[in-house]
Amino acid sequence: MEVRLASLLQGAQDAEGTVVIIDVYRAFTTAAVAFLKGAEKIILVAEVEEAIALREAGDGDICVGEVEGMRPGGFDFNNSPFEMCRADLTGKTIIQSTRAGTVGVCAATKAERIYGGSLVVSQATAETILKDDPEVVTLVAMGWAGAVRTDEDEQCALYLRNLIQGREANPDHVRGLVMAGEESQKFGNPETPHFHPRDRDIALRIDAAPFSIAIAEEDSLLVARAVAQDQPFDPATLCGEI
Image (cartoon, rainbow, N blue to C red; front, side, top):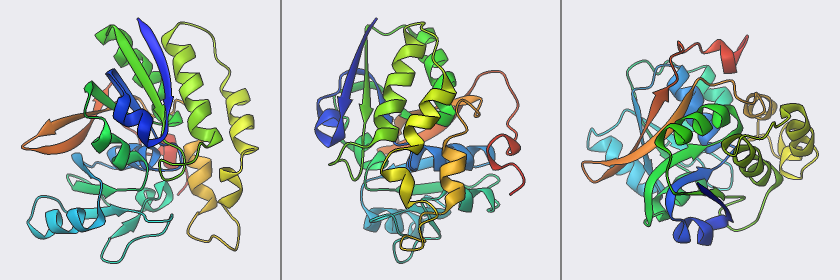
């Protein structure tokens, strides 16, 4: 199995084989929490307007996402794991639009299979990929808006590569490197209140979610679903006392 590392929007566009689109802060951490909170599926779109149109057409119940890290007008929730922890999502269809994660998924047109990647689902994602045993795996660190590399996504790609290739990886070391990164400083900063500090805390609960996030086309839409690893879903694994 060949494991390739790629970055940003161009990396998503060029990615081949089984592709993992990585967005730790926050798209695929938010998605993981939504599944733990009972969401049935998540429709992934690139544009805000498309998300709202799908909800108005009755294709989904709740719009979740961000532009420049902030909840777009007309959306129900920001792209926030913390907000998902406090929401009742049982049986709901989420429509998610973000500037990195969902854009990357939509751009990965050469992929044979797609997974949404974050630190919370890394172990389960590696296990799913190893069961599939593809010839090529491309791990794409989406960074900030698909244009600027960020430590959390790059470190997640390295961590996931180590898991896939059977090397021991230390979650505490990964967590320390991510915490020192520039993006981590936005959370809890009074100048960026839309980045809640609990979002960072949840995103760094490495390997806490017992499922991977598989993405496939359904009725011309890109739909994410949780692929369980024979463990029950317990919101407390990510949400704790929230």
